[in-house]
Length: 484
Image (cartoon, rainbow, N blue to C red):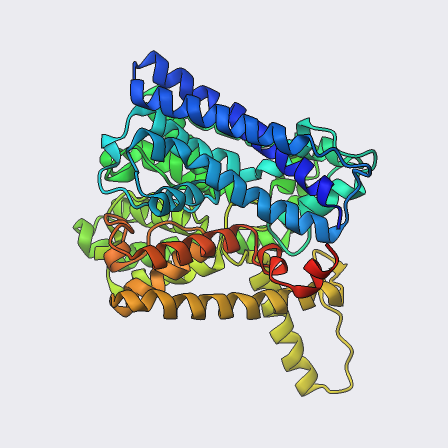
């Protein structure tokens, strides 16, 4: 185990985080938010010094392998969250460490669950940092680091990190050099974000509010600076723009690269994209028909809210245009199912990912065909390419771990003695990085009433969901630490 290399990478992560405090410091100074300005300044110094101290441990060999990458990604995200919650604690707006950590992990993992009962009471600088963590965590801070900080001579070492942090069963490179791949991904990410900001401003939303909601849409996070979320505006134009952009950010970013390269035929043939759009549009239609009576049988209004909620839940963003907790049970259960399915692999969304659902469906179909035709030989293919046995094995392993983590988490959270729907939806929401759940943790409620133990468990669930379980489980593997 290359301990020095691990410290070196985490040192870079903390230095980058310190620099990311600067926009919030600027806002605090501009708006004369004295307590917040001091809080961010102290957090900046502490984080920068901590990162610089770790960089003093210069490794003799900067190359890393798979085991180091898992440790770097897991410890890096934990360090990012611990130092990232300092402004909330120091400013006094979230004095509890557990609550501040929950809020910060929810931000970086793009979950959007909150313990705040009055979001609008926060100063602008903290509101900005709270939503900026979505944008940072959406594409991944380590991917950002790989784009700007050269780590090793070869691309193989960095690919280990990218695979450990990026969502999906398979992670590859768009171009031969990984650093350029990271830059392409962030360029697409930035262009889409800026486009949404411009469109929201064009509709009359203030620049600050446009930035906040674009950060949440881009990172599929869902933190709003309004207590009623997007529903505060009650504006069809905002609902449509944010709903469409959430859907776009839930698409695999390699699709956009193919579009830029002119490979339109490959884009339409992509099986995951077609299933993703099919589920989203089909669910929107079914829910819209189910909730029409709530909107005076006006299909246009029902579809507007139905599509928005399907888009925000399936992409695991977590905004709300209305209180879907009051919708009929059919619609609520559909939304709960969409929380689990999630967005596309290679997007900023969470959940199990559409590609895994597709692979599991193909696997079930293959099993049925073998039962009917024992002598037949069927090869599973995705987009015309054979799916290796190792990939399917990782999908099965992920599913087993996912069910196990969810079951244990639900048992622990049930100690708070909330109703079953609250307990189950809270865990599913956090594990899939969605944000709001149902009943006591619904879109117009928050997680403040949960115990400290439940908040810590759900915080761990958010990290497990964002890093797709295995990097964190690796930390508890005795075989890994025996080699240190």
